[in-house]
Image 1: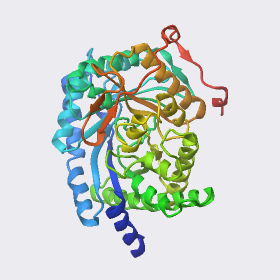
Image 2: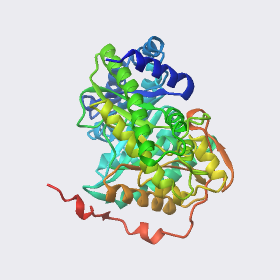
Image 3: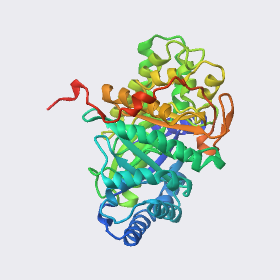
Image 4: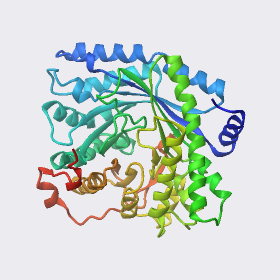
Length: 452
């Protein structure tokens, strides 16, 4: 039961601290759409999505009006297309991307995730077709998001796929260079990808999930920052308790929305993802939380420790508020989507190497980072390999969403618009890793993965 006091606190968080439900994501299984004929497959996919999600946006808007809780996005995730299309006789899945885009437009969602492949141990023929289709698919669609899982703690890292994804990211950048390579903003590579993540670009509906499910992502960096302003100068125990209590309250809001959406749509409730996902708006920043803890700028010595504290206590508070906390849950550190991170980069306080260190303790990884357009595909693969290794060895989800902006160089600014924000082009270490990446094969799983 939500108490009167909680309602009052929630209203205050919404009005003063930019609390919102970042997304209601409807996961839909497309496994029953499988067909050897590409035209029939596309028709089944379109019909299944438009039928299942026909009331998603309307329901979200009704809940938003009735409860006064902003719900920023309504989205869909589907079974990885490389699985759904595996029996199809075709050499390209671009038409499926078009079908997903049309279906998303029809039901009114802003993004649909699941143009994906899971290749942590190796690629089958369907995986290869999907990966090769990514540049054209993302160039020719507006709402489709793509992800590829390249490694896991149990299987190691598929370095053949890491090598290929460096090239795919470059080709996607080239295919959308007239729009500042924005196609790469809809493409993410993972290690240990979760099957119930409601956030884009990495959302897909895992094969272990139900037929359809509601997953909700809640975000409240501004709420956490506001709470920390009341304990300025206090010790770390007080700091941790404040973050935990605030995360609990934020998660309760998500739980309310998720349960209500589940009931009205007659779709099972899946998980709450309590990820402090920032926006370009002033006061809605992870970097500003870190600075409120006592850092002059995000990136200063102590930043990784501060982020670890934040991430851990967000999760501790969240799991007390809901029995079904999942997805990623913690703190995101995207550059272009966080005003404080942008300022830290511009001030010279935050480098790509420091961001990589921070990914050891954050929710995801290197996110929405713009780099020079002439960065080599091998260097991009090397950056990916480093991040996959962090995830593999530390048994956590890590990811890379990096944007080589064609025609831009270090120090330039690129505008993506909307929630994607803008970003300074960051410098990249250009010492070659080509021979390392060219080795191919698979990096084996770490010794501590052998648990049975």
